[in-house]
Length: 162
Image (cartoon, rainbow, N blue to C red; front, side, top):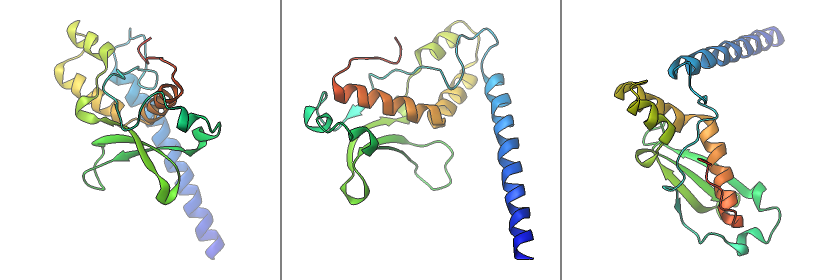
């Protein structure tokens, strides 16, 4: 009986995730104009407003070739139920030894290509703000931020807008 119940719950869980995933793709496609050169996942953002709490480049951190596995990215929310984080923070280390390395605040998050769409009247101001917040909370933003911080720590000057 317990096995059947667990199997049914697992079935519902898998089914729910599949339907959410398909729905997310449709939502993202409808957010941007059809002639856009980017998607939500590939949309670059401005990296000039990332705040670093350590010097960059930093050979003391990067001399250990395995430092990349110790980098974690976390969203910071005001309330546990907030959909949009206030900030995205990048940490170095594990457990109690974590050190804040960099932070990107939501109100300082800029997407120049989205600003261009607003300037060309391809999106409204309301759509612009919604897409900006959606992109900030999107999983791709965390990954792009992590990559940018790693490159800065190594001394590689690569801007996501390039």
